[in-house]
Length: 163
Image 1: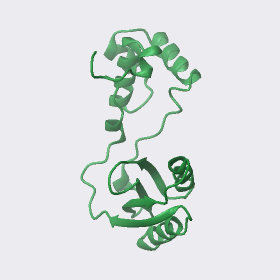
Image 2 (image 1 turned 180 degrees about the vertical axis):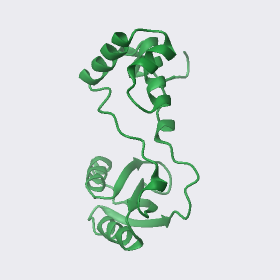
Image 3 (image 1 turned 120 degrees about the horizontal axis):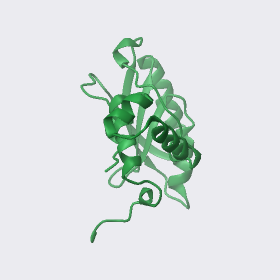
């Protein structure tokens, strides 16, 4: 299709694989019978396809979808980061940020900032500790951190597009 970049997943995912992934995300659990019933293939087909996707490292594991409201009080923050420019700076900064406990997402972006970082801590003091670690990285020019007051929607399944 003109104007669309080729999708590397097209090389190893067929329509059945995509249906399995979509069902897996919808159900939120590896229930072979439910997935097979929903998409109209055998349980062994679902099992073999999931195994193949793990073997080629397309699926890196299965994670529980946790109801955050059931966990002890948590604080979420978003940090907008401007890094010092240099050779391979995006990979270096991303690696350094990704190693800080409490940072659960690192996005390299275009615009006034270089990175958007999602942070989750046990308290405001914990968020402060994480932000201090960010600010103390030599590769960071500045950061601006925003505390999240309420979470109205947070569903990591929405981040995965199979179509």
